[in-house]
Length: 119
Image (spheres, one colour):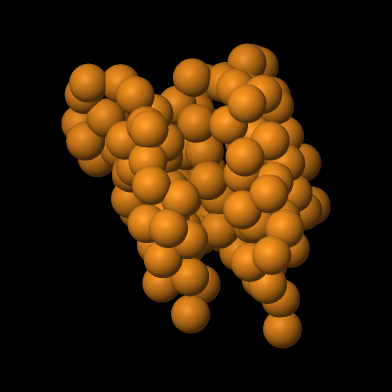
């Protein structure tokens, strides 16, 4: 059964690259360039969220992560933060992200980690 990955990334170039990477991954990927609200995300029922820290929208990536993880329905939903922020480990810890990847990240490492969380 295909797993659903929600990818929220505001950098168009990175988003296009991720579309190519996940096209052949065996997973269903949903892409957004802006932050989605918690209710919209729950309707999508993702099995994993790949979330940029600096996204456009009402909530920033870390805020959205924290909000999702505070909801008992989503506390086990794996969220991987991605950013070039120097303090990404601290940001990830404070918002209860399951993991973080520092940009630029290796696409093979990304796929490995995604598959690890989804298996």
